[in-house]
Amino acid sequence: MKRVTRRAPVLALAIGGCMGAAAAGAGAAAEPPGAGSKPADFGALTGIAIGAVAGGPVGAVVGAAAGALLGDRYHHQVQTAAALTAELRQSEDQRAQLTGNVAALDDALSQAQARGTELAAELAHTDQLGLDVSFRTDDDSVAAQAMSPLLKLGALAASMPQAEISVAGFADPRGSDAYNQELSRRRALNVAAVLTSAGVPSERIRIEAHGREAAQADGNLDTYALERRVSVRLQLPGAPEVARRD
Image (cartoon, rainbow, N blue to C red):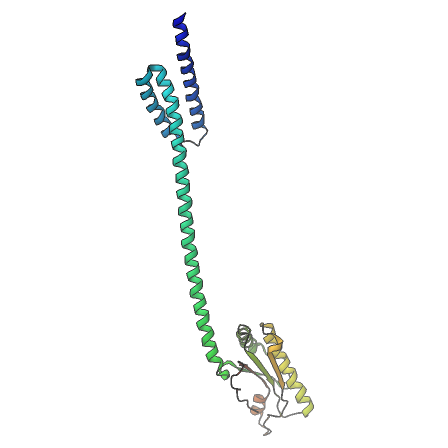
């Protein structure tokens, strides 16, 4: 009777060890295939060997359960460290990419500043940034071939808030003074409308109507064609005025 009593704790310990091993096995099975199995199995084998030396078959069972738990815990620690390392590497890659983007932006800003300086120097010679729009006889509509240069000039002026635009309308000497004055004004207004569509605020456009006051009354039709125009000029505040043909 005593012999049976002595074996009861051993049997209970063996059953507990088997349950612990089963629990460890269930924990390992819950992981994705191939994840964590080797460390847990290695821990279990190590525990079996140590338990067998220490307590025989029962000790082997208990050692297997303890070794499996320790191996599984070690495996989770390794996985956590690997995840942290991957996150750190990703953060370093993102930081390197951000540094590259900042460098690219700095380079673009330097180029824009250099271009701004170049444009400011060019605006000191506003005759290089002006154009004349020609018109047909008794007509105030802007020709299609003049649209692209006007839009480009307007976009340039819109990008430089300090720049102002002078739009001066002219007419040939044929017709009355009042009619030619109104005709040159309509021509200037139509050109100004194109510049406004390119982004130039209307308050930065100065409109002038000169009628036929600058026309050459020599009866030459070629000269008349030169008089039917609108003169467009860009100018920075304080820059010298461009001499106009008047």
